[in-house]
Length: 263
Figure 1 (cartoon, helix red, strand yellow):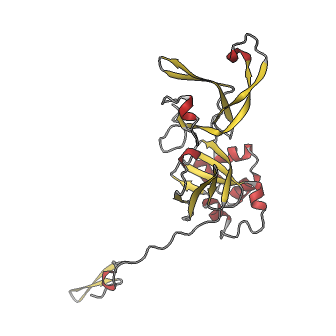
Figure 2: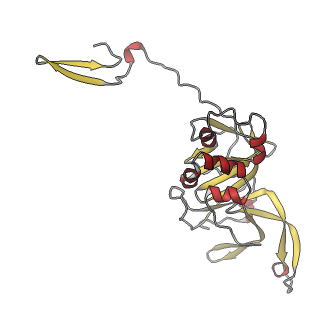
Figure 3: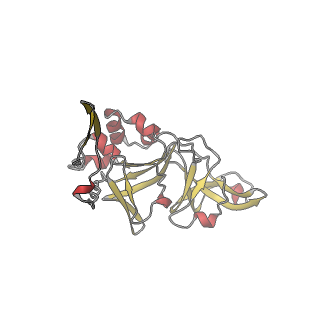
């Protein structure tokens, strides 16, 4: 990791974004990340050698801090804040999983409805290769709800309405009341209630699935889009901008035609 992240800073909700030295991802030049999540502490099977025993027999340790890596996998920190001359060492109970493209990540977590729609819309490659994106993956159950897709004119617009381009929206970066524009041109607003995160009407039920080109969160419903309000026209009839201009020469005299303007 490039920066020093002590256990205290990583344990403050909603967690911390951890920067690595891996610059191979498709992320507009940003390094690959991992994300801590103090709201998702789990029981971890650790070895006794980290707890002061000589035996390597597995035991169950208390709840520990979860660190999300690729494919929706995570590790737990089982011993933290060991200083050395280059910074801090944290002992974890497994290897980090390298992030993979969105389609591989969705497949590994069983999001078949989302994958089938992407395939039928010929958007699998686009979603996998668009740099620095945040994707909200509707669960299989979300697609099975009555009239779940009626807010969108097509499958491609639905998928685009669940993608925020040029934004790495890990859970710690999603703030209450923040509004983002999707690839479809619609708006989504983040709401935090009781520690739960909502994207318009949809609740995030699995967060921080790190992708090769960004991050994905699983939501329990199809996101109902919000259409941005039109910008009010504040000019006057005389201030109409030229839409097109054409010159003609007739009998040696130049005539100027400007669309939308009386000359």
